[in-house]
Length: 150
Image (tube, rainbow, N blue to C red):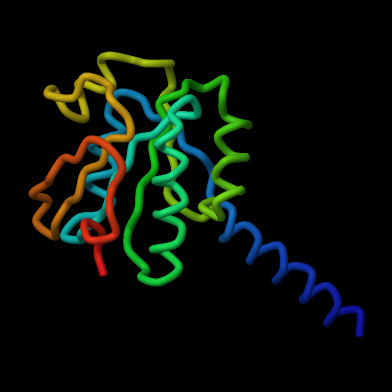
């Protein structure tokens, strides 16, 4: 009986670990790492911030759409490493804690933005839709359901 209880306990811990992804530090080279992670797979990459009201609308939309259609999603907060707890709280609020999430290592880091897209000047939300051969489409502003994978 004790073995069954311990087994159940460890299974519950494992499921919790799967559900709660760590928030990675987005540093020089992280963009390339993300692209390589989804080699030959389409994915959506969304940049957002705690002080961006339209970003919350987009996070809600992404959460709703992921419940309906499972698609590869990467979230990158531009808030800086000291906002980690707040970012985690927002992700939990929208039930996005299992998404591949990143946090700029520095607040409003111009060189990190440039690494993602030299034509991006920091407006948020900013999204990139990658197809399976990683041709990408950039979108400034809140995404619509029509723009997301089905």
